[in-house]
Length: 578
Figure 1 (cartoon, one colour):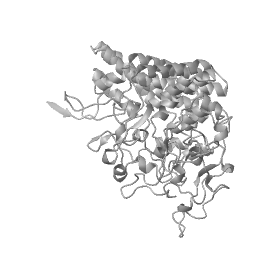
Figure 2 (figure 1 turned 90 degrees about the horizontal axis):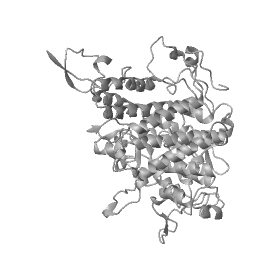
Figure 3 (figure 1 turned 60 degrees about the horizontal axis):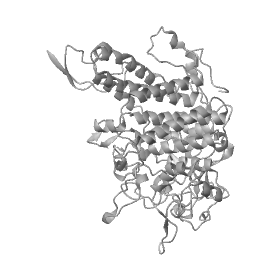
Figure 4 (figure 1 turned 90 degrees about the vertical axis):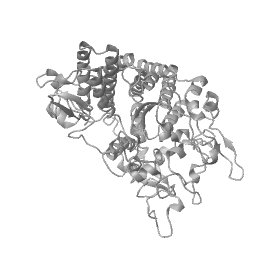
């Protein structure tokens, strides 16, 4: 007798995923490996699991942005990384081979499907995805711990690899590159995936772009921490980024919203983090974590705007000071910049700044919650005086669930990788390459009003050129890094950039400062802000004084191996000084 069995998505040790099907004499609660790895569809469903592990917008993912001095949180383990007070944990989800086991299982099972008549080309699509994700998982551990045991097959209890020693940093990194190169050969292009209605799967250019990311990380880390072959890996980063550029599969998103009366709004950067920026029509997104469209068409949802409230993840003045003025100069050099005074309002502080500041951080009048637009920061929600505007959506705030996809890797990052690697290799960069990268990012920004309401004067963000840098005494490397910081703000990069540039020991020990305590923050009743709020000599909110912050350059550039892992495997040695 036939039974209709509903198999749901499973993330088990057998890496199985199923849909409703008709089967004979099959147990209703289990399906063993020998009954699963038979068709290409089995491989595809198994590979689907990996996509659920991409970084999303829940609490644990967004707190990565508070590891650096550019973000603030009033609670959680992230603050211990931020201020240097953490200790070696007993266990950690960051040191975990579960997902690596899943990739190994798929890679070992793929040949069985070919033997049973599966289309080799199609099988290799999912082999390529598994290779990509294995590289991804190892890179996440590599960033944190350095060299780790390299487990490239599924293990049984008695296998000697169960107690493998840590691979060297070089060996670990080379395996990541090998997996990515294998994936690049097997994966489909972004356009092929879109034509097959499989947008969101890992493409050839996704693997190339990720290779550029990992090579830039290690190349610059080698250069500034003085080990390895920095030039080799910086060249690799530049070449991989250029391959993505030359593929013509991707472009910067430039679609603005429709304003009132058919008016076109120049808010394409903001729309990257709204529903308008979803799907293959936005060719800037190279890797995304999908959440669906609405309740009726949902993969999952996430209360991202709620996470960005309650002082969970907030911008600091340490970060905000990096926004350029409308003349393309930093606040330390621009004649347009006036330090805030008692007469300045919070909204006025956004005037004549890089438009990405207004698209990234809340100001008066921005869409906020179902009952009202944004006015001024509330200390219970935005303790630093700043709130993250990305992903803000009234409807989703009310639902306490958002369906806006998270860009994990976008074309803007590829352009920034190319610019940085080019400069690091030659200690110079041509105006042509600046136009291809930095200036392309600035060209999609709206014009800035440097006049008055009565007499507006709209200007574009100036181009960054060698002549402009020379005339104004700018350091090109600093400006390339600044562009990366503001373009990729609160997308999970700032901390790791400080680590690879070896500047964490400088930035992370500075006092953590919030916004100017604007007069409008405090009413006659002392609400919503306490008039006794602690401020520095410039009237900026003190979030944490320098006396409570530390970063040990002999220890903190690597993370501690969880102590239970060392206890289980005596060959694993702890990182220095932990």
